[in-house]
Figure 1 (tube, one colour):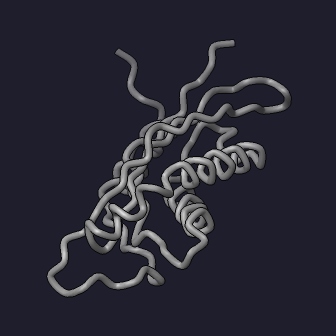
Figure 2 (cartoon, rainbow, N blue to C red):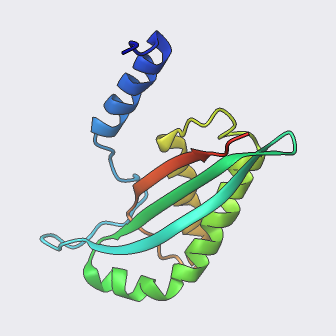
Length: 144
């Protein structure tokens, strides 16, 4: 069995460290009342094509969850999920068009930052999530 290349070993190590590090919620998230449990709203899979020089390179799949200060805030945000999905599709397509996924590597911190901004713009009513949790982010290469 062949040993992994130094580059793939380094990428694996970097990915492992990035996933193991806790991410703090954004500083501008509104605070929940003391003792309140958070509320969550799932965002189903968003899939966008990644095209490099007019050739389909693969597909990016992202699934996330929005975290709110309380379950009541999450419940009221559920009606906005179609707007969030639309904002995520537009954001992911824009990132793909600007070449962010051309090398099939996903920068989860960059992705999270852009998706959080998309959520804030989707609500547009002053409401925002405390955090965007990336549940799944993968790149599926296309043969050829």
